[in-house]
Image (tube, rainbow, N blue to C red; front, side):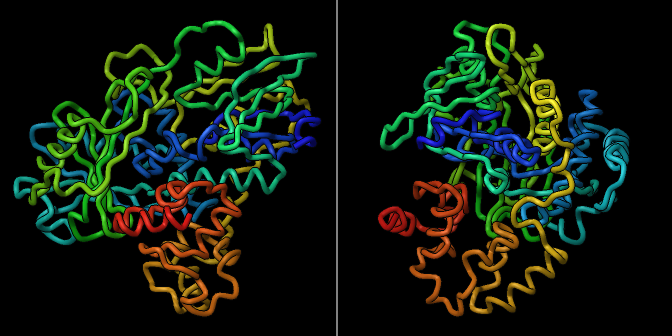
Length: 496
């Protein structure tokens, strides 16, 4: 600890979500010394509450956000390349609804979507008959035709952790369960009071610049740094999701238009489930706990029941979650129309530099990180070149395609059931060998807690991935909690 207290970092990053961890990795790879602090767990806020998609944002075309969509489509290609274990292609079925957007509009939007991002590896749009093949019988009979196009899925929480690992591998200090409680400056150096919990130890971290990536608390952190009130830049929008048992066969995602203009996704999730979301509900920090409301639950059920031939009810919901998106307020009345683009704010008039980040999307986090480093260039002359588009994230250095990689692991670890092995390959990629090396039989995995979670994996997550509570493992490092009974989850908590 004394080493940390005596050191002056180039960057102190506050916030362990996707933006904070992405910037930490990028900056460390350019030779900057970095300390990242997160008051809870990595990805414990908005970054683990997404729709789990890497996508261009087809509906943003309606709002004229062509640059945002183009950049997101380019990033989709980049992330498939640098994180092939975490990011995988899927096909999206968009049924034509006679009462809503006309066919020509959908066709035109998808034509633009197919061609806007430049070079692409995913198949383009096709017309689909909803009464044959995989979609047969899934939707109500009145939905006869639609379109099918490509995007990608992602494990959002693991994407954050892999960026944090990538930063740590290049020398960054990652402090979780550590809250920044005070910010002062002396001799043009930030001095941050960092309070650990549990334990309550306090340390001082010194840094030349501050990166405020604290999500929905970004305005609060600006005020802590400047010691004065600042104009409210944020528009907080809550997005909620429900998870049901698997509602239909096939691996296609469905994209449903609603009469209010919003879009709802029904997404195959974790092999056995269907994820339905999301909502756009205004949120204030004074509203209390971030959780799905009855009105949002009814909205999502209603949207699904407008399309699916087999109706769902509250009894079908096995899990739900809600996150608040800290969007930059562009003064649009409709929450769906608020820009998903990001905005930077740099202050350096009366304090050492502080860069605050408003908004952003998980799809474009890497590009946001590069952009942030370019903004810092004047404070660090000779800063290295952009590099993150060509270097795989930890676990992403597969020498073969993902399916072939899984086959190779099946030969090495034949005692693992196929679904178990697939989950581990998706979660860890080539890092699977760090903790499976030497395992020859199921007994080598230690205690089996249920839902394919074993003692060997849990111990690895504590040692190498900052897992400090049972919930960190059950719901973020893995989604095993979804596959376990209440008794199994309680048993794991007791062991932990």
